[in-house]
Length: 324
Image (tube, rainbow, N blue to C red; front, side):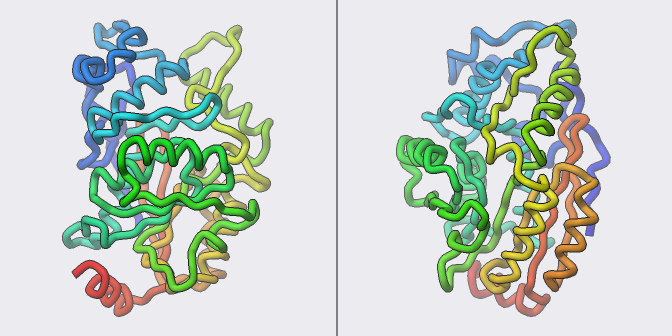
């Protein structure tokens, strides 16, 4: 099942609304820099007026992007203390929120969205930013487990959790095996209503560098300047052997080892070229049902692929048992 997104979000500097985002996404309208600066004064030095007469920031500047993220998290989600170390991934908040809202619809399955701590979500590769648990907890009250192979990233994420008093809603776990995804992260007899992941989508450092250069050109920056990763990202966050298709293939295979541990397994798929390989992996794993949910943020197109090993009767029993 594919849920198309017909509309497109305009360029960040265009004087129109960002209509490509999910209807419940609080970032659909242009950024209100007056309110953002009021709650996060450090953002003020990055705000300037563009050619359209609108306030904006330089989205090629990592410091500006991080300041914007800090302001958005404080204004929209009540996260008063958020920071990441240099070079770690600083995610674009609107797109991350879209993932959360679309998987909320997936859980609802045409009915009411389940809210509150009875819903448990596993975020594979939670990162130093801890962004999905923060948005999901504040938006729907879900409880999260975040796993990662990087102890330093987990330590920073734990600082965010502690500083904002979110220990009851977010648990962090070290994935001790760099080759494992669910093995070791899911405890025996543990159940998750959702799993989610933003996999590394480059296949090599050179591939990641080329992606940075393309992004730099799309932002309209001069070729004579040295491209920088405006959203940052370290090795495990950006690339892996075989890129996202290989990573997701391993994820699907491991999910088949825990068929009854999750209602819906999900992942972002950045490249449409990865889809045929992902679908082959799902068929080989013997999933009962899969869905592809299209998303759009500006000119960037991506999608969520979701799968379950439960038949319709088992899905209904899961919902009745866990949420009602």
